[in-house]
Image (cartoon, rainbow, N blue to C red; front, side, top):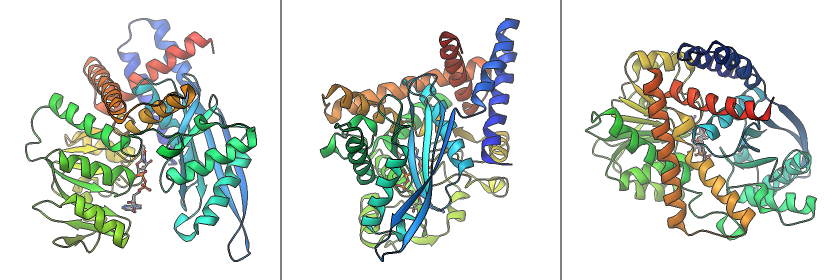
Length: 420
Ligand code: NAD
């Protein structure tokens, strides 16, 4: 099954749940009709990007932008650089952005972009030419009121700065609101760098209280040690949690007494990987995912928990900081086992919330201090957690289905007003 098909299955599942809880037969019918719109992205753009490499060779890369829905506002979503990027993945990620923006109630739709490339094999100059080439091909499809990209896997503030610069040259005016996740010195927002992790932490604390006090031990394993994973580990570590294991693409490290995350971040900066950290035992990513911990935090790539390894997962709670880390079959198996899954569309929405704040600041040319950003993030994401909890209780379902019900109801209302 391709990934986007599992999105369609989730839409159908959500409609069934809404239908069961809706008394009016007219409304029951329109739920299915409107949801049909979400089963196809509104626009798919594929481009070729020729890049002159440092050695004089020419390489042609493939890039995508998928604009899934703008029912509630401009398309919004990250730009990923990874060798496994493909259209099915980008479509799926764009759908999840539509749902995420609706769950946290910000005035955006969903989009996503990607380039099939291994950025680790490119020099800074090649990376810059690749980014600028992508912007030149996409410029007519994006813009502050159309579609606003942001960082994702292996793209960062530097890539966003090149993006903003190239876009501004093309349109002939300084346009910071065309992209978010920019450096603070170049119209970025304070707090954006840590927003995904910080938001995930607020959601975790908020929902653990509602779920009940079963995570007494508060030990955590984190898969992926980049922007989302490393910042989350640091925030949770400072918040009194014990981080017993973390991993990155080079493997993982474990210490049952807990890892000193500040030192580990320093170690990763110096050596390029978490492995070899003093006082830790080396483990594989697979071991980390099936470790006996209270909270497991997948923060790397999609589908790391599948039907093959889900029966070995021993965590009580999973906080999905990555997008789509659990396959749909694994999700059902884990839910049956009683594992509480805090879904990606809420858990990692801190990033898009602060991206929204960055965009607002850019449009107003008026900048907030870090405290204001943090407080507004907390308010916005905790309100979303509360809305989700209420929806889940009302419909008698789990958190993932609750999130999709909440989002699809909101999107359908927007579609009704628009008269689609
Ligand atoms: P990143 O590039 O900063 O970090 C990715 C991390 O994953 C790196 O530590 C890398 O070594 C690790 N990794 C790669 N392959 C791995 C593997 N096979 N096993 C274990 N680790 C592996 O990316 P990020 O921005 O932290 O994104 C991580 C996830 O979070 C993605 O699913 C992304 O879509 C999601 N996300 C990120 C943001 C954000 O603001 N950065 C927002 C929402 C969702």
